[in-house]
Image 1: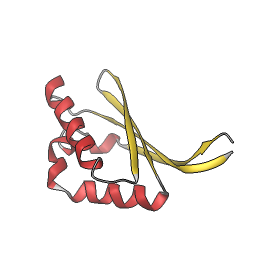
Image 2: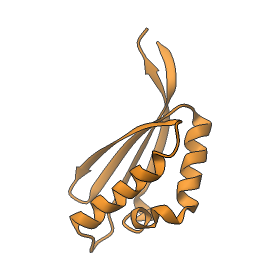
Image 3: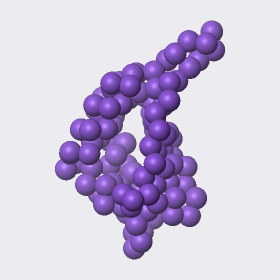
Image 4: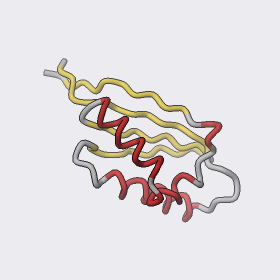
Length: 100
């Protein structure tokens, strides 16, 4: 196997009171923000009731760390950040491998 970047897996609960449209808008805002960075290679979304899991791929651990930090500081992702219950966030970053 050969390492091909990293995979970030983030799960969280949506705060009460948000509509599906607001949740979708927040997730689209996050996607739009991340698309600015060539080191980010896609985001997959899984949803079960009020739980969201995001799977995002990056070139390296440093890229994940830098892009995530910029996202947290950016006002461009405020509509995403306001839907997230911060007490429920669980984030793990793994090496991403491909078969030779």
